[in-house]
Image 1: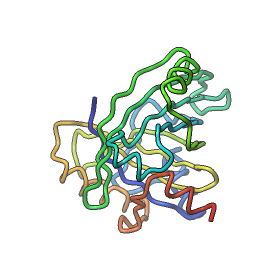
Image 2: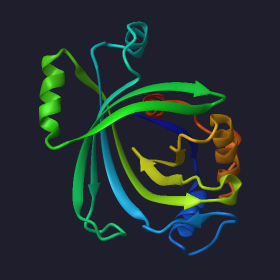
Image 3: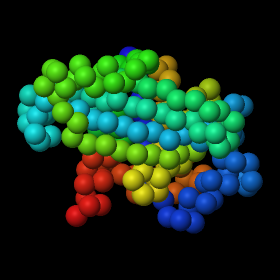
Length: 209
């Protein structure tokens, strides 16, 4: 189980292109350093499960915020040259503090996700939501919080352009991390007040209306 503190912000076409060029080393942003290991091109398919018909029923029953199967595909055209896939089963409990998500999650690698799907279906769970993401993923550092890794994903989720920045280190106060995340996204020319605190289900549901 680990702590995640993250910030996600919708980006315009121009902002997307600028961030894209920064993480690929084609241009620079003040106080953002791309760490060794390079940039990965990832496709993620997230399947969310529940035993209830609505999120209101789920919350009232105390069901975890996220019960998820994630499949990650590192395509043959990925920047790091990888050509592989992985699947994970995750249970996540999510809280919101000052508009920033704090997540505690249990996640485990699974060899065959169909087995998990069968277990969930036999236990009365159903898939109620699916999210498809194409992302460029990279780790960065900044002097605004020394010794901490900022995991950046520049992504297109069901057609919507976003950036997500996440810090998982446990040894730093949550408030320090939150302030650092807000300052960090400013280096990309983004306004942290534009952060989107909704769940992806809420975001994509509103898109369909």
